[in-house]
Amino acid sequence: MVLSETENGRSGGEEEDTDAIVKTCVLSGFNESSEIRTLISSLVEVHEDRDGGRAREIVMQRFSVIMNGYQEQPHLLDPHLEWMMQMILDFVRSETSPPSLVHLSFKCLYIISKVRGYKIFMQLFPHEVADVHPVMELMSRQNPEDLQTWETRYMLLLWLSVTCLIPFDLSRLDGHLQSYGCMTRESTMYRILAIAKSYLLVGDSPRDAASVLISKFMTRPDVKQNCLADFLDWSLTTVSQTDDHSVRDIGVLDGVLQSLTKLFKHGKRDDLLQYAPMVLQSVEQKRLSDSSEAKLRKLCVKLIQRLGLTFLKPQLACWRYQRGSRSLAANLSMSQPVSATAAVCEPDTREQDHYDIPEEVETVIEILLIGLKDKETIVRWSAAKGIGRVTGRLPKELADEVVGSVLECFSFQETDNAWHGGCLALAELGRRGLLLPSRLNDVVPLIIKSLTYEEKRGACSVGSNVRDAACYVCWSFARAYEPKELTPFVTQIAR
Image (cartoon, helix red, strand yellow):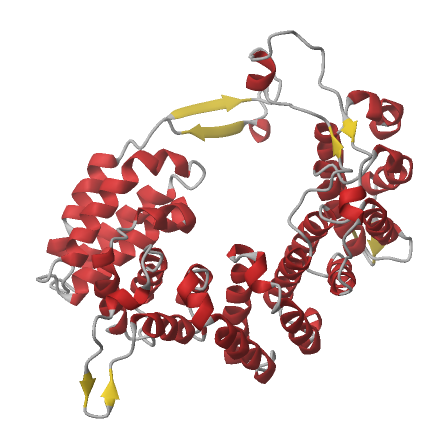
C-alpha cells in the first residue's frame, strides 16, 4: 500500500492547513491473499451455530472488510479470482457439505462479485455440460422466501446464466423423458425458463440475476425459436396487469423491465425487430415515464433506447465528426511523424439516406427528450446516453433536428433539471462526434450560461449540478474536437 499526502500546491515551509490536505490510498496488489485463503478454509469450522454464530460472524465480517477495501481498485483481485472461486465451489460441490456451509460459501462468492462486478466474476463459473443439471437441482431446492439465503439464489442464477450457454441443443440433455403415470418430466429448456420467470417476480436481489439469466438464455438459437415469442407475450401481459402504486407490483415491473432491457441489448436485431413495435406500444400505453418511482422511469428510458436501436440499422453515422487517432501507441507506431491527425467530417451520406427511418423512432426520441427533463438524475443521465446512441444511427438531417430539440432544454422557461439533462446530452453527442463544428456557434453560448447557472428558490439556490454538467461538456469537447475548432471559443469559456 502506498499512502500519499499532498497539500494542494503548498510548499513545506508554508503554514499548514489541515483542511486542504488530500489523502489518497493506492494499493499495489492483493496483499491479504494468504489471509483470505485462511478465512475460506475456516468456513468448514464456523458454518454451524455452535457459539451463537459468533465465530461465523467474525470470519464473514473480516472477509467483507478485506474485500471492500478493493472497491476502488477491483482489478487487483483478477489474478486471485480463479483460486478463490475454486476453493469456495469445492464446498458447494461436495456432497457432504451441509446447507449451512453451502449458504455461507455463496455469501463469500457474492461479496467477491459485488466488489469485482458480476459481469467479470460470473465468467469464471464452471460451465461444462455436466454442470447444468447440478446447478438446476441446487436452484430448485432453494426457498425464494428465505431472506437469510438470498445470496445463494443470486449466485446460482448467475451460474445458471453461464452454464445455459453450452454450445449444444438443450434437448440433448433430456435423453428420453420418463413418464410417471400421467406426468411427463419437464424438459431442461422449460425448467430453466420457469426458474428465471419465477425469480423475475420476487422482491429481492435475485430478481436482478434472473434478468441476466433471461438475457443470456433467450439468445440461444433453440430457445429463441421455441420460447421467445411466448416470453415476450408473458412479459407484456405482466406489465399491463401490474399497478405501479403497489409495492409488490413495483418489484414485478422492475424485474420484467430489466429482463426486456437486457434482452434487447444482447439479442440479435434480426430476431427482435418484429417484436419491437409491440413492446414499444405496450410500454407507451403503460405510461411508465409518468410513474412516481424513479427506478421504473429509468428502466423505461433504458428499454426505450434499446428499442430505438433495434429499429435502426447497426451502423455508425458516416457523417460524424472524427478527430482521428488519439492513441499514443498508434501515433508512435507511425513510420513518418505527423503533427496531428486530421479531423474529418465525411460528407457521403447516400448509403444511410437510402433506407427509411421507421416512424417508431420519432416516438423513441420524444420519450428520451422528455427523460432529459426528469426530476431524477439517474433518469436524465440514462436519457442522455440514449440520445447519443440513437442519434449515432440517424441520417445527418434527422440528427441535426435532434440536436435542435436538445438545445430547447436551455430555455429560460425550463427548470434546472432540463438544463442539467441538456448538458449531459450535449456532452454525449459531442464525445461521440455527433455534434458537428458548425453547431458550436449555437452551443457554446448556452454552455457559458450553464457554467454560471444559478436559480434562487426561497432562501437557497439550485444549479450546482448544472454547472458540473457544463464542465463535463467542456471536457468532452476538448477531447472530441481539434484545437482549431475550439480556438474561437476558448476565451469566452475561460472568462
